[in-house]
Amino acid sequence: MHLESGGYEKKSAPLLCLLISLSSFCVCASFFITFVLPDTPLYISRFVFLLVSVIVQLELIFNFLLKGYLVQTCIATIQIIIAGILFYLGKSGTLVVPFIKWGLSSIGIGFLLFAHLKRMNDSYKGVNRIAFSDDLTGLMNRKKIISGISNLINKEEPFFIMFVDMDNFKMINDSLGHQVGNIFLNEVVHNIQCVIKPWMWFGRMGGDEFMIVSPKSMNREEIVDFVDKVEKHVSLPFMYKNRSYIVTCSIGISEYPLDAHTTLELLRKADLALYRAKSYGKKRAVFYDENIQHDFDHKLMMESKLHQAIDNNELFLEFQAQYSSAEGTIKSYETLLRWQSEDFGLVSPSKFIPIAEENGDILQIGQWVLNNAFDWFMKGKNSKKIAKDVLLSVNISVVQFSNPLFIEELKNTFAQTGMQPMWLIIEVTEYACVYSPETTAQRIKELAQMGVKVALDDFGVGYASISYLRLLPFSIVKIDRSIVATILNAEKECIVSSIIQLAHALNLLVVAEGIETEEQYTYLKQCNCDCLQGFYLSKPEKMIV
Image (cartoon, rainbow, N blue to C red):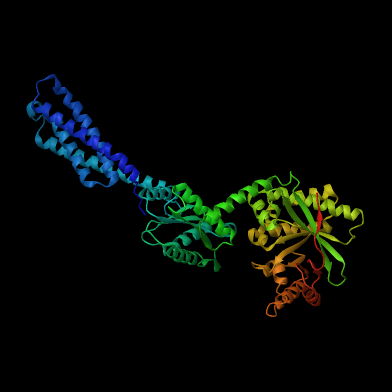
């Protein structure tokens, strides 16, 4: 899609007028001196006027070619030929050389000049294409898109921009390689182009992020229908080596002039809407509204306060017992992280853990949890308040688990606290298996060799869990509380018993969390669930560090 730079047109028009006037004056002056003042000292100055005229005409031809003005280019070329004729005229218009010789030579020079400038124009177009086109996809690049949006804003007509980002594209890049990832991106571009309207602009902002601009006035219902088609076309299967891969997309939408009046603000608010779409679970489109800005500002403030939470002693741990179904005794304690913020009160882990993972604070927080949980556990062991066969379970973030230094730091923590690897259970979510499957497999094997047990947490809430149970050396499966909650549902309670039977068939222990009623407790005991955890049995115990 070609975007014309309106600002450049306005600025260059006066300059072109000045150059045309200057060239005309120089040619007329040369005519006057040649035929009216041939025997005066001014005669020699005609060469200066002719030289200036030629230089100015060259500049005009270059500008005309850039703009595609072929008629004006031909006129300027003819003026150069006239200047050549004047150069070959002697005093009073007498020919210095025969007419045919100077005529043909002048015409030849003019055509050679035209061909040379045409090649210059083609080179300029090539440079322009490199500067404003994406190398991989051939789409408009970020610079071109921003320039086009700025021009639309200058026209002061309403329009929408749609920020499109691929969900979990990193998995394809990491598992198949960047070369295949590039092929996939081009396939996605082809699929999206099938639904792009003729008046829309489609470009790549970078990576797996794209921008669609709709200059034509559309209402929100039409935009919703359009982005729905985009989402469906993005999620079309991508075949590679007889295997199908599917990636979805999230879309953030902002509108001019409703949401912003400048290019940067419009892009920023589309980006905020995209962030909201991601936080809602991806695979959706979200229009920007003021609540998004408010929530984002709140998140920034929470992020700032969380960064200081350790130093301000606002973090603390709670421990919840997990009981043996057969014996009724405590088999282990799960470590639960809490944040009592001076500004926000008691903040749910579901709110602050993702923030810590996003900004990297989770590495420091995770290490703080290990240090203090191990200290508490060893004090209980040494004082014999915790039985010898009782274990400690700690949740580890996918970011911390994927850290190359995780195993080394864990060994150092063992040495500093006296904690034994055989007493530790590390819980990782199913997302860790999807986020970085190779790294996760390697970590689990290293931990198993150390004697640390690894539990697959939140089993049953998503992803392909069964394959991971079979392929990775997990020791324990934890059934998510949302699955336990279906026990009283006659149509779904069989899910729990099926999970328990499957895990036992794979020689895995099963822990059910979130038990809140006697009916759930009784059913799980009947299904031979190994360990039980929940408010029905015991509430978490607070431990302030």
